Amino acid sequence: MVKQREPIIAIATPYGESAIGMIRISGLGVLEKVKKYVRTKGEIKPRYAHFFALLDEDGQVLDEGVLIYYKSPASYTGEDMIEMCLHGNPLILKRALELFLKEGIRLAEPGEFTKRAFLNGKLDMTQAEAVADLINAKTDLARKVAIRQLQGELSKYVNSLREKLIQLLAYVEADIEFSEQDIPTISREEILQVLKEVQNSIETLMSTVKAGELLRKGINLAIVGKPNVGKSSLFNALLGRERAIVTEVPGTTRDFLSEELHMEGVPINLIDTAGIRETEDVVESIGVKRSIDSINSADMVLFVVDASKPLEKDDWDVYNLVKQRDHIKVLNKVDLGLDPSIAKIFPDGVRVSAKMGDGMQDLKKVMLEKLGVFGYEGMKVYVSARHAQLLKKSLEIIEPLIHSLEKQDISPEILALELREALVYLDEMVGAITTEDVLSAIFSRFCIGK
Image (cartoon, rainbow, N blue to C red; front, side):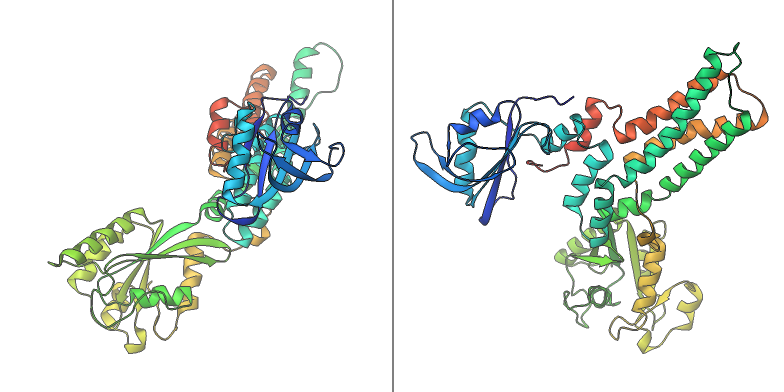
């Protein structure tokens, strides 16, 4: 049942000058509150685009635009809702906002329109989360994934698992309720079959979490090494353009540079760092410290050495900083020759010439393999860290249950109890049950006006 809550308002377009700026209002009695400041030709009808004049407190025209009224429940939020398209001057939008705030319409919280859509059953939780993913998508693949989730692909998958457990629970509870009557029951083998199907499906979903997090958030990838090993040349080669200054002078890069790179649909924040070495130069030492900080905050590191020369103490000092982290060894400058000692020390190093472009495809392939990126297009849905945590909890109930049933029968009462608990986590995933803390955590990352 749709609930009409207190009216809320927000500017739904980004701040700044633009052709159009939108104001969105939703909640109880919004049409009556808006009519005071709106002039149209005739009655405002639901789902019609009305040319209108927006008036100030003195009845003077502030702006002209288009107004659409959505009557509950046929709106995004499920409530009565109005969208005003005005000229995108921040002064106009600010004045319009002030007018309606004076009428007792409250400023919306981040994501509150989508939160109301969820509470009114217009979206389930996974679809609501997909709205934020779609807005924040940095690559075309991330957009495609978010659209699939918004269209209910993940919901269908999870709901099919829920349905299997619910039907199984119904059989078990019937067995408890009518144990003395001659009605059909479900065998232990049939119970095991259903539980194993659910187990396999959950494991398949959980295997997508790394890909899902990469697509949603991207990764920080730092290029590190001592001075003059070709880090900036590698940075430029990966980007495919001259972004960093490249010279033969050691220590040219005094601070880090960062640029966004897209590889196979994964957004990568590529960081070119200052060469790490002991130095008395105050400015260079600050750059070295920032390089070390980049190593500590990076999800992956490209450790670069000059492969044409034997390793030096500075190389080993840098390697000791990265060896415990997720890293790839890059043997650069192979166009100048490959020192035999380096080939022995780092046999798994990727041989490249950033200057000439040799080996760059091999390096990208290794990077993608390290990230576990291959095959993303073949998947339809990818779970988030929140989803994976709930799936893991459900699996932690199902797996021991399978092991126990394989050895012996379990009383229907205990089986029913375990099945209900496994269902709780799947219910929470799609929002069939929620807490206010969970809702706040999810919708707080939305922008205001969505």
